Length: 154
Length: 154
DNA sequence: TGATATTGCTCAGTATGCTGACTATCAGTA
DNA sequence: TACTGATAGTCAGCATACTGAGCAATATCA
Image 1 (cartoon, each protein chain N blue to C red):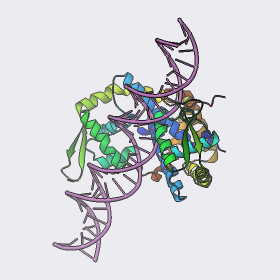
Image 2 (image 1 turned 90 degrees about the horizontal axis):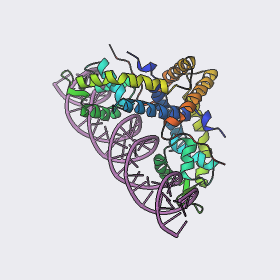
Image 3 (image 1 turned 180 degrees about the horizontal axis):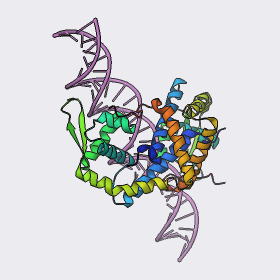
Image 4 (image 1 turned 45 degrees about the horizontal axis):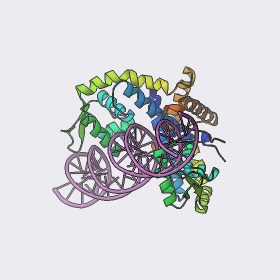
């Protein structure tokens, strides 16, 4: 009988569970209310102004049906804007607001602190190795989920 | 500006996302309808007959409010039973049914196959190392989530 | 051009996960 | 024994994630 600790799937779930908890705790301590998912979306919008929802979803590997709600909440918090695209009337162009920019700037130390805390059991060398192995496993499995990572095109 | 690929939190989410997708696909190919979470719960009930919900939650690091729904669905599928405990009228004792045992037995190859597929980008040595590092990071962060792993007591 | 396929987005439904609150019960103690 | 605190379980509410369906708009090609 295999132990849970020998199942990569169980370890994946557990590590992700801790990562989310640490992120939320650090961000709340800093006085903000933003989830890991919302943070990644907001940072990606800032880095790619005017991108549409499908492109955003591809850049951070979210499902297109999930991104709708995430953006809803960013808009509701006043951190992002969604407007109709002039080139393609199906698409929405996403922009970060000044408030969103301010939030991102102020929240960065908490986010970085969270990344450190979730690896606090590992040495610097081990942390690097863990990330390398995760990246490699993820790259090989990218197309196995409904929401694969996709590059910006052009 | 840090890339997503340098954020352990993002890698954790992505790896877990792939792990779940692979699990569900393999299990469905085998003709079953069971989530990773339901599988872990059922296997743990089988290994610890008569355990209560809080103990089960601790053994697999689920939140106690999450386990309620998971067990609901196992019961509804006829794979597990929930009955009142005689020793503590607050608690429910969990048992696996014959159908549950049959399902676990038949589903095992698919589950093991899933674990291999989610690591298909890594060599055997790398897979071992990834699991070692995940276990170590998880152990150090165990108490940072609301649902930490807890041992069976006696 | 007109039919067909594809794409961007949304929605309904289901399953985790969490916070916080609540009930019922149990355990320890004054 | 009465009080207090802890514990087992549930529930409401919110935020991911996914499946599958559907609508509107665009792209493709006969």
